[in-house]
Amino acid sequence: MSNHTTNSHQRTTPTPSEMPSRLRETPVSWLLCFTIVLVIMNTMMFNLALPKISVQFELSPSTASWIVTGYSIIFAIASITYSRLSDFVPIRRLYVIALLSLGGASILGLFTDSFGLLLFTRLIQASGAGAIPSLGIVLVTRYIPLSRRGRAMSLILSAASLGLGLGPVAGGSIVQYLGWHFLFVITGVTLLLIPIFLILLPKEKPETGSFDFIGALLLGIGTTGLLLFLTSKSLVALIAGVLAIALFALRIRRASQPFVLPALFGDRPYMALSAIGVSSYMISFGFLFLAPQMLARVFGLAPLTSGLLLFPGAFLAMLVSNRVGRIIDRYGNTALLRYVPWLMLLSTVLLALTASYSSYWIAALYILVSISFTTLSSTVSNELSRQLTTDRIGSGMGLFQLLQFFSGAFAVALSGSALVWQKSLPLERAFDNLIWGMAVIALLTIGSSILYRSYSNKTRTANAATESFATTAVRAGISE
Image (tube, rainbow, N blue to C red; front, side, top):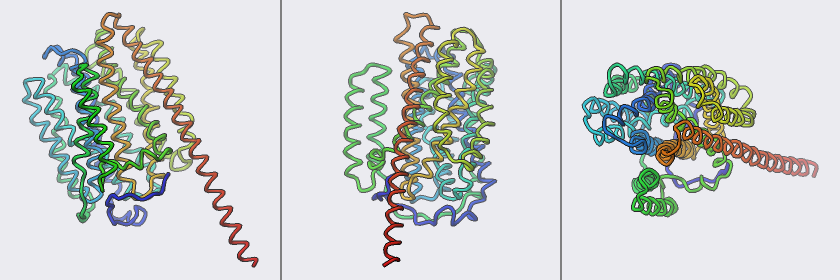
């Protein structure tokens, strides 16, 4: 990784290894895990509600997808926003703000009676929810030593896997027996967690700093415009999106403390690693959007049954992630980055070949998809935390999550639009085509893995040559 410093303000705290006593690791880890489970459940539960919401408000698949797409856009922007703010705002304070947004919007959601109000509520939810996992990773990176960090990262990601599994089950049950309004009760619980966060999280002193709100706004307008064009074919949205992205690119090069550090885009190992995480996230998120609709529309299954079929994949991924954390701490990330992308490709190809024949094939092969995704997420996050320099941790991890969540929003928007484009085809054929598209994305995961290993080998060779030269110079000096 590049070692160039940036202009962004950095908290003047010791390194994580120098201050482990300031964080009560076990209770904080479990608190983070529980909260992340609720947040990820909230994301997944509404996938099960989309068929009924579409019928109630008479929405097309592409319009209904905005319940997930809009949420993902705001979630993504919130994730990097809170990561950047954590450089100078205490994490405790940021968590309180985020939980108030998430929980408060959930209370409002209980009383929504229109698609517009439902979408607005989901966006406010996302503005708080995006902080939970991103601040968790910053907290782990800042306070937990490298020797235990892999396990801590995997614990957080195993919580996300559990949320992925419980979300469809809980969502299916609630939608089927109580109605989709009651989905908001789950995240309303987060309001009760605020006192616990205040007690357990370490106190930090606020520091001076600034935040690039203009850059954040331009990025939000740009991505929203491009996704609106994808779902509605609006040329106005396309022009606005392209213009905003162009202005954003100029902004981050000129701002003293940009929303995204432009140097990260020129860091090839960082971008290759991020591409692995982004492509695997697109596959997982896109499939979890498609699967409930496929199970409902092709196989005629009720929401609860669909949720139960998807639960084993997420649950087994949660169990595997604990083992993955131990492997990372003991052996590093290299082997997992080399082989797991191939497992992702295998699972998507098998899904494309068999998904339209039986719902049980979907359930069985989703296990492979889920395990592959969870393993790659843990591995990439841990490798990034090892490779990024201290002054880039907040920005680098935040940008990675931003790219992931934007890619998830893109996958959902594209999937919803592609179903509309293929309305003349049999449903089974349309869904199969989309899964083949995921197999192509899995190839990108493999290519990114090969690129990253190539960059890493060059870096190791260069470092070895530098060390050899330094050793030779020292010996020559001694002999003289």
